[in-house]
Length: 188
Length: 318
View 1 (cartoon, rainbow over the protein chains, first blue to last red):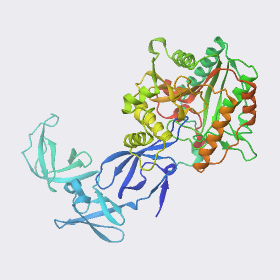
View 2 (cartoon, each protein chain N blue to C red):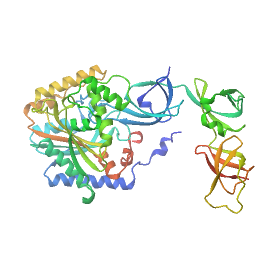
View 3 (cartoon, rainbow over the protein chains, first blue to last red):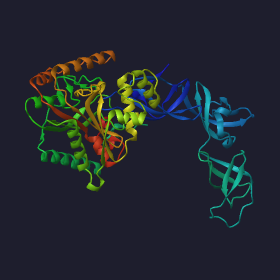
View 4 (tube, chains in turn purple, brown):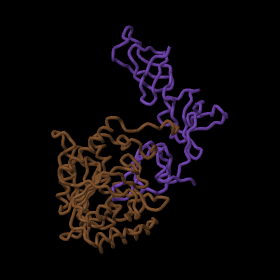
């Protein structure tokens, strides 16, 4: 099994800790002038998303996690699994609820997502940063109010609910930032 | 994608930080000139290395080492009767790279015959404070090592058993694998206490545990502690000082112990510096000495968190 020494640590590196895959978020070299060297790292658990701090003695080695990222097109959901396809090889795979998580509400058929695979199995799914989705339900638009700060909830075709400006109408397509869940603009 | 080396010709230091370094160098020389401390120059390359297991020397292909500090040369000068001396120069420590570390860095080291550690700590604070505008000069707070650890980590570092210190350090650091007493203490100070030293304050920590004496004298009044101190500005470790160990037999015993620890950790043996032992036998005389990281000082003065911001060409692009 591949392993990394602490002097190879850098952000983005995927390592195994307590049988879970983690990504290094931040790596800090800590060494008192007259003391031993340590690496203080922030790591994100790739299954839960939780970030923890951990310390290694400099020179220690850690097992590498077999994690890589792949762009795949979202096909459909059968209610239990979300199905994706590699647009190059047409190879398909199914991600479960744990892997898709909250991102499910942004998934629209045909959109290209980033799938993180651990030992070949889907670990997490990042929807595109921006998606364009049709509004299926919202209060009628308020004509002329194009600048005011007021917002109202709107339900999108995927089921997600976002706050949109008052002037936006049902059946319009809006652009949303999936990282924040915020409305960006109307799409003509 | 890493940029090609040809595009890395630029310094990483800004014009403002370049000027700051020049001004600080000048102020340091002025400070010591006024106090009658003589500037000296000693070799960057030495025949003998530093046996301290926590410090690795860079070895030259043709024999000899790049110095890790001018300490041994300065002690030979003290034995020769040079009086109060300082040196502002480059030192090298293999493998020390990070936000606050560059393997080549500038050290200000000075020795004060007849000073006790508290007089020298006061002088370190005077020097650091003199580099600030008077109204912005940081407050100085002195704390015993044991008190600093007790208040931050809730454990008495002098009385606690190895296993208790280990458990406490492991919890604070979230670390797997065994820790010896020294490593546990390193973690308690570096991760338990130092991060909470107030910004804009000079924190002086003194009376280190005897097992961390390095080359400081063990206290006669309380043999659990050594006359060693460190100076922090905010959470940043700036300087390390001793009431110098002047007993040749004891010095030789420390070197033997350091090499024993090196062997246990699978590190190379480093022959003790016979010329230093010769000088110590001839008599260094009671004195206190301190080494201050000038790049760290510049970081603190400039308010930056990366050492590369105050170094022209850091290790990776030197």
